[in-house]
Amino acid sequence: MSFTVAITGRPNVGKSTFFNRMLEERKAIVDNVSGVTRDRQYGVGEWNGKSFNLIDTGGFVPDSEDIFETEIRKQVVIAIQEANAVIFMCDAATGITALDEAMADILRQSKKPVFLVVNKVDNPERMLDATEFYSMGFDHIYFVSSISGSGTGELLDELVKLIPDTTANEAEENRELPKFAIIGQPNVGKSSLLNVLIGEERTIVSDIAGTTRDTIHTHYNLFQKEFILIDTAGIRKKTKVEEDLEFYSVIRAIKAMDEADICLLLLDAGKGITAQDINIFSLAVRKGKGIVLLVNKWDLVEKATHTARDYEKELKNRLAPFTDVPVLFISVKDKLRIYKVIEVALQVYENRRRKIATSRLNEVMLKAVASYHAPVVRGNPIKIKYVTQLPTVVPSFAFFCNYPADIKQPYKNYLENQLRANFNFTGVPVRLFFRKK
Image 1 (tube, rainbow, N blue to C red):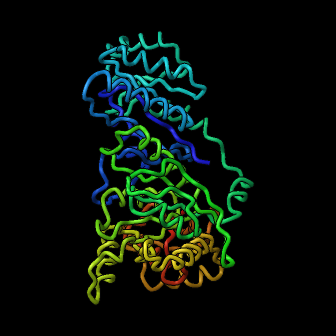
Image 2: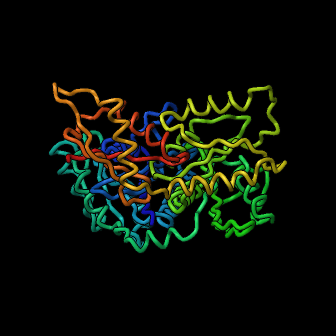
Image 3: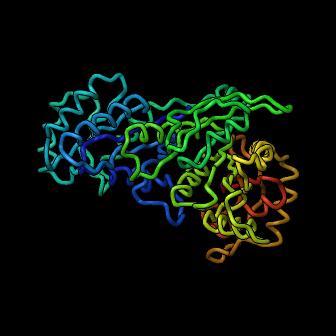
């Protein structure tokens, strides 16, 4: 189950600062990918071993006060409908405004848990002023400073109490049929791909970006292959999420990603990979999903001898460090390599479920360790004695050694590359853990 938290509040109360604080300071999204915007609209937060989706509802450029209020109202309503909990943010420096009151009225009527967060409480005087917010009558009220991070711990402690622990049964139930989510920006051909795959006009296809508003589940059972296809509304750049329905589809797309085992990330061959695509890719990696990259509209590209090879190389440069992903050049319109998509997706699904016998794992990996030792730290040689695969959905491996904290990223990369070279984990993020033996 995915747990989604939406941050609402009028402009300039510090939502984005708070949002970044929740993600970055808590080691949530740790991707040094170039082009991932700082003001991203959504991400994954983690606290006390539980993770949740975080969505920032900011980002309206008002033309007039009235339009502004209706737009904010719409966003709040959607956030309430779609999120599991709402963080309602106010500003201690300005006190309670009419806009805050209006939002509070909408939030009070909802059945969802609301956390009133009063921001910019960074000195004793402000703390005194901020007590007026008790008059709004919410049960959960927190005084924080997004800039320094004070008060955010208490808020997160309460927030994650709402997230249920995933039981083993639940994980088992979810694993019955492979689930493939078709994700990507609007108008890259997601719905058309779905229609071609299932051979019927299941979703409305048009040239208007953003026609698909909702996620659609389709059971596929043809040619001895069976799985669930999830078609999502396109994920838009933040500046484009002006229309409330777009904001709605962003939440839906992230939920679809949570439900899926494999994400089929559709790109437009003409546009190449954009910062937004990298953002989506990072989110899928972060969530431990299998990934297949589909470059659509390949029929429209002028080709020379090595066009595909060069294109793939450029793609993988942009996606580094995780480059062990299958890339398919397709044309939905001409049905070019469409069935290959299913084959590759099912192969990645198998890779994600791969379990390696501990004896075989140690035989291969200890040999790799012996041929290239971890660098010596403070005169101490690092010794890796034993490797085992952990019983998790995402392929994860524990390396038992004498100084787990001293193993640096380049050596971790070497070990991951050795795992990938010897066992097939193409298209799947692999997690390595180092523990004291």
